[in-house]
Length: 346
Image (tube, rainbow, N blue to C red; front, side):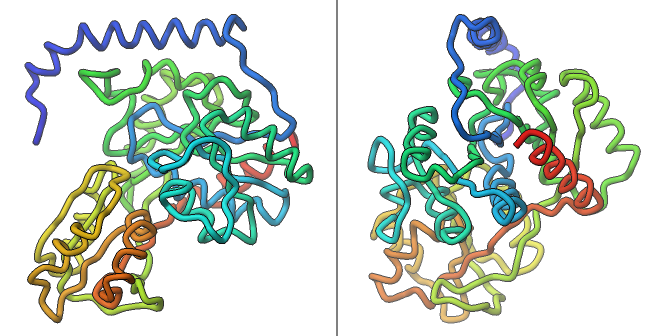
């Protein structure tokens, strides 16, 4: 439901207070009053100013593919939504419940290319990674733009094309975690979820708006979301026609729009972000499901739903759509920028 303008205006004074609190916190870190610790590995952070749904997971995956052959690396996440606490290194016993859905997705894809670790305290996580794996030279931190207790060598800020931070406000009138000026900590900005054909004039306008808040010379790159071939929960590609959408992600609208333009969507079930699925959820999803219809989810949902649907014996009725980030015309420039930064600093 679209927010009414008068509600946003009424909440603006609270946003000013929230923004002031984050300003004070950032000031204390900037002046060294609050301590930001340097760890033994080099650190790349992928984060945002906006709450959820800016495409951090595909960018972490992109960086893992790009850098893992050059530099021994680990992906370090807090493991949001898991049933455990503290430091855990993913292994063959890991699950979405033990390390969180996104870290488990990373481990499922990259267990041969990267170490995947969860720890609420990133500094502690970095120390323990060094103790166990002293050869690891680089940490990729997911969703840590505001986690300033750990120093970083590169800050990559993501900006959702559909919800630009430069038009938004802090909580509760908007969706920003801090004021727009937080973009000054970025070493690069990636505008995610762009249309496939973005006119040059619009790109220039976006860059101009972003650079009102970043440091001079910070590069801005543009990327789209690429939806890959649908895969069955049983493995292998699958032909889809009629689908029932199920998604527990921060911003399901783009996923719903993709499915609607390509398939006949018979129903949509939207769950809260990081939803912990239950057997009753599975029962509800397959209830009255016709023989020619698949339940289609995101990959993030699949890592949590798969054990349940396998136990239920209905994995053949479920499919998911992997997503990746596509830099299009900026592919070479972004890859060269990342490699140049890692070569020069690492």
